[in-house]
Length: 328
Image (cartoon, rainbow, N blue to C red; front, top):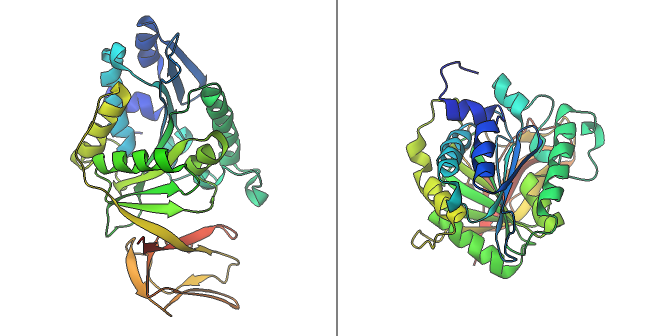
């Protein structure tokens, strides 16, 4: 990690919440650090309707833009702590991978939030996921009905919609609508409705704790300390208002896509029918071959489906991409 990083960014990237936690504690909040890279800030006597927000970054160690954005946001909020209007958990997912400048140490952390991990069970990230699951369960225990989880990422590849989000279908209608509207305020252009878990952190919180959770992709991967923060301006503004309980208006309604099919890598014979530089939301026509895996051939079933997260290099048994169709 570069020695010249601004203090705020370095502290967050290393999961060092000492100064920030002290400021909230001095303002009368209950500030805790239940695990490395996890900060919780709760009102000493919270009203029943006080919202609960989990904000996670760095689940993939090479996705550094949200780390910088949130570092400055939390630093600023801690300087005026009385403005905090939610109970907050801040999680820096894979601190070791961030330090190493890698996506992960052994395996993708964002596939570990599941009951059965198979041959991933002994990985470094499996242990980290267990730590985060325990902290998350404790955080939401006894909290009110307004529960959000924003898991902030950046994408490996280009995208027809550079800023998009994945939202679990199982979220109840009213909180789902509120979440999608807020995502529009944050500059999100497209939302994919996800019908089934792929082991992601945000699906886990939605499924287990009734949280309005979402995985948010905020543009492209960049080097820590060298990201163009202007690309996160809309999301930073939306976060500013959310954490302070401010009424927010404006923003464009994201385009909503439904998941048509999930592409699973069944064996090492798996190949995709397009290159690794294929952009997210690239459209394919009915009958086009998506991937081949031995005797299994994945083809487009609708008149048009768009490919998202194509990655033939995932481990066998994991999702290698999803195909989506525009809703309505």
